Length: 380
Ligand SMILES: CC(C)(COP(=O)(O)OP(=O)(O)OC[C@H]1O[C@@H](n2cnc3c(N)ncnc32)[C@H](O)[C@@H]1OP(=O)(O)O)[C@@H](O)C(=O)NCCC(=O)NCCS
Image 1 (cartoon, rainbow, N blue to C red):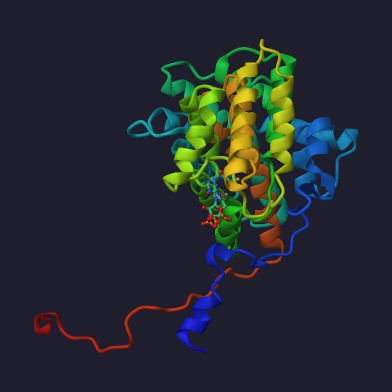
Image 2 (cartoon, helix red, strand yellow):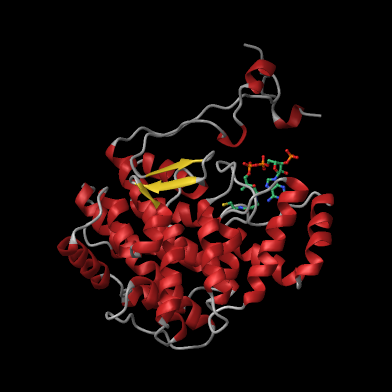
């Protein structure tokens, strides 16, 4: 095969390449459907809790009442970060962004692992639950320290999402705030071989430990074409300012060859079901929580992006005004996404360890032809 023929076979961005067999989630891009272990993700978001979905993704089955109670207790028991981790967050050099602090903190958790040589499935499951449970505590602790405020200990009477809000803002959330945050977290919990999950699997496939795989995933999620599209989408809505400016803004962006953040998707061809549900959530915000202005702005952007370029919104687009309305600072949108996706990462890392082969694709070489080494002093 010539180099040119080989180059034609390159799947840029690995589009269309099947790289794993998974039991965790399924996306039907044509129908616009997402399911977790067979259950429609939007149905789970409407009816279950983040903890229940964690159990499902980690164990393949929804828990019964006893199993759920035990699992919730296990998460509660693991929420508190160690004194060493608190010290690390206090003493991070410079003023790292929340995602950078989260990446460093999760990476450091390997140092306090009580049985690092135990690579059994049960030990990795325990580690996964510890990391998932502590990520919101890390994000909230770092955020408060950054604002010059005292960190707040987790409240064991609150669920995972409600406790996150409490640790950030120092007040118990209204039921509706906790519920909407929980729903958003469920919708962001898992999404097949997206970039950060794939990156985590590549790292796990070398048999590097779970901390290394999580660290890889957090670093990958931080990019603007992946997890930080939600904050970029909110910046765009704020920049546009009002619905009457949407049409010219979108036209200007597209003519300048710029991307509309929170739009487009590798897999969904007819729309992202998570975006549709978050649009519904935004529509039910009453003004006390949220501002109806964001819904009309966002729907106008959706309309224009579709008219002008045939684009559909993805989860990040409607997540942005939803989280903004719930009072989350924009800098915390991506860390909240990371806390949600932590469970998907964990499920995939465990699945990779269960049936492992190093992930190592090929590349077509297009560099210089083979040549001989010339000593430095003889080079022109
Ligand atoms: C998500 C994303 C990375 C998928 O990328 P991809 O599958 O590699 O798709 P491509 O980058 O090849 O884009 C295909 C075409 O759609 C266009 N396109 C895709 N997303 C676009 C967007 N958000 N704004 C403007 N044009 C977009 C591309 O310019 C390209 O157009 P062309 O064929 O005229 O050149 C891409 O849609 C994107 O950059 N979106 C914005 C960032 C974002 O929202 N990320 C969160 C993902 S959940």
